[in-house]
Length: 455
Image 1 (spheres, rainbow, N blue to C red):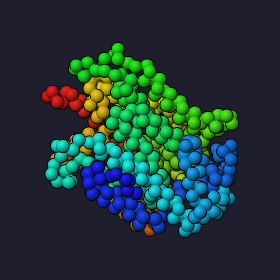
Image 2 (image 1 turned 90 degrees about the horizontal axis):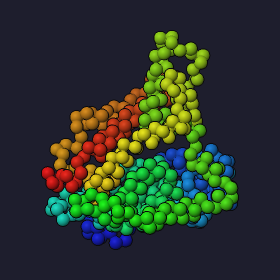
Image 3 (image 1 turned 30 degrees about the horizontal axis):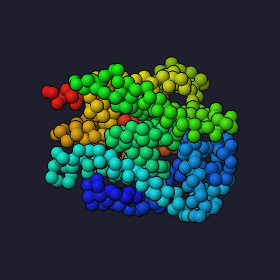
Image 4 (image 1 turned 45 degrees about the vertical axis):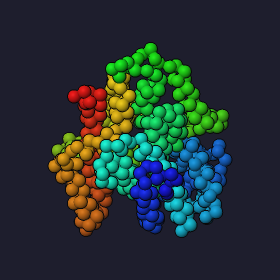
């Protein structure tokens, strides 16, 4: 939905972009929706029908409440509007309930809460210097950023077809980033702390936020060359940031701590028994790991190096959300995933801290928030993708044709029904892993702004 005051971001074009994407979202209302539609309907029912002491214990549906308390209260607030659309959607025992009024309410709830996302994009646009922009609208950084964010088709698919509330959550994050750019550090820290208690997956971003705030807020002065003045560190500011985190956490988790339910809440927030990647369809590193284990097990059976009686039957390819044991490669424990995650983000965090503490404020703005600098870099490149990246993207078309139109008519359909999702998962995981490495290389090797200007 269009946010008020967007004209300040660049005139009528921003309003047109916001209104246009809102109308598109309305057109997507009757489209397919995934199981997440039922997930959020069930959460509406749980928070509306049960006392808070039962929210994180209720298990009538397999889609139990597993988001932090602020999101539970968000569902609770929505439920008091939902009852005016269809009271039956708030019945816990009405599993897979999907009336036309329920569909309208849930779809419109996502569209309405996207107003925060639109407002946050508007605030981010105000942080971009448009003085050196070209005369054409398509050359203006603010316009490019607005299109990339507001018309992000990945977000449109996941939120307004698949069904989730990522736009609302990204709105909180973008607004927090905008406040940091505007030197309103306390507001930025508060918004990010609130975001963590809406969806804890944003914990991955917390180290970058910590380094940025430490450098730009807790240290209050620089030397003439732009490097940090170590004796300018303010313990008062550090304590104020810690107090924000503590108070937000107390507000979120305090009621469950008082009920002696904090361990239960944490067990729901970190459900390790769901497995590494929801069986095989999440395109992450573990999809590649699982696929490699499957290939090695097939080779091992063909070469008679493995005992077929000791191999679990189709555990990985069953499509179930569960843990399973790998056949050839070592099985991955929760501790191992934690260590791998820390190792994966450590070089980036160290790189950010080194650059933040050695160079001026403008430099760590750029390292922490890669999107504006990415836009700047893409304008200097002759082509957006190299030949290998173009070949990979074009490969998505034949993959989709095979999975949707060829595979259903093959003899493999009954014996190997998991192949289409497995191929799609692995293929996308290759692209995502490649993009991750490219981003890492860019973050760690891109010359600092201060040095670039001198050169």
